[in-house]
Image (tube, rainbow, N blue to C red; front, side, top):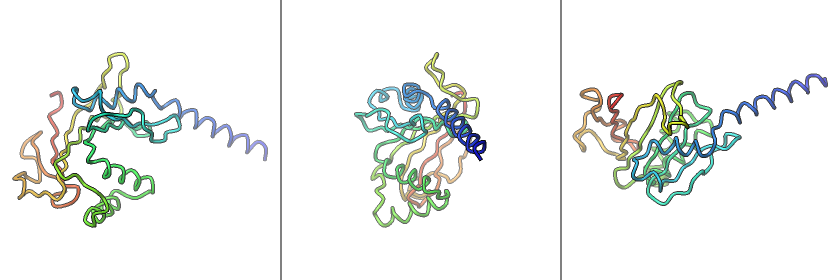
Length: 198
């Protein structure tokens, strides 16, 4: 019995140590997160990231209209995002529902109902999200101060917008061209994915 307890304790210590080792320093998280932001507003952006236990925490208090989120060390690949503060209620609600174990469809349905009821505040004007993303080889390089092997995507949220109200197609007409996704819903947004390398 004692041997079993010892094995459990050692496994816990090992897994905790590995989790802590996988979490970059606050400085690296902030630097990597801000790479997704337009350069002229990086200094004033708010940044969220992860502590050494993997909990979602505030890393840097900001002074402007942008909130950035560092790459999640528990997620494969790299993804940092920066979005207009008017999207914060929408993003916060999504994180809370994911923490409850809700599926992507459940999250969509719940936020749709709450947005229609007015209990989830959505942006009154178009609001942009900047996304920097890459596969397993992507990572923040502390020596160069850049994120290697990533590409940009821009998302402009326009709740309830449609193809008819914007003149946009529901699929890209050519590589990298803008299009509208989830039209007519609280999550309607324009997708713009520039060709890689540009």
